[in-house]
Amino acid sequence: MTCKEFLALLDDLIDDSVSPETRAELQTHLGKCGHCQVIFNTTRKTIEIYRSHEIYDLPAGLRDRLHAAIMARCKKGC
Amino acid sequence: MATIQSIAAENEPHPDVALVERVRAGDVSAYDTLVRKYERQIFRIAQHITQNREDAEDVMQDAFLKAYEKLEQFQGNSKFYTWLVRIAVNESLMRLRKRRTGKMVSIDEEIETEEGSVPRDLADWAPDPEQNYNQAELAEILRKTIQGLPPGFRIVFVLRDVEGLSTEETAETLGLSIPAVKSRLLRARLQLRERLSRYFHRTKGPSKQALKKNED
Image (tube, rainbow over the protein chains, first blue to last red):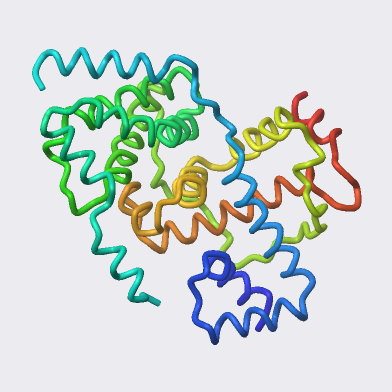
């Protein structure tokens, strides 16, 4: 397997959507290629960091305003 | 592979279905529960698309109100969450178009991609690179980095990797083909990885200089 072929399947490997056979091939390539190992580990880490950190906080009071707006609609007919 | 458990889970109604039924029967408090459950996600999606806090606040408000008003049209065969996300994405794009009158805003425009090119910046990262920054610094790095992505890549990454939609749901929400979503997701992930490398580099250490430079 070449690095290019590995890269084409990188997302599937990260998302765990490869067959056991393909996974074994990818793992074999990873074992031999430091280059792809770094790409694999740091790409996985990139996703994990974005998933686990709140970068936009919900503004205070927004929920209350929304609740008030819904109640106002509701009084008109629900 | 589908297991007996996963098949059973698929056949069980999603907890939101009961909440939606209660709202339809006139119980507004059930809608509050849905709002609390998804408000953060909807606000984040709106912020990622509009890149503007006021717009994102308006979008969140409008999306939940619209969903409330259109609840009768909601078909139980799609998830309430993905239905809501679709409304929020459309509201966000409308808001963008209003703000940039005259300029076309599109998330499905062709983006040149270099399929299959192997990234060259390959310095490894420190073991827990985010720990070299405090919360505020890290949030700033993550915001700046993702804001630098082309919009069509950014929204695919956000829906798929941050907010947990499937490839199919992301494609349907954005009106893209599945191969287009896959291709953009890979490019988005690799570009983010490359951009984050200058902060998370192992050998040069945490580059606070990179952060400073970015602010200039």
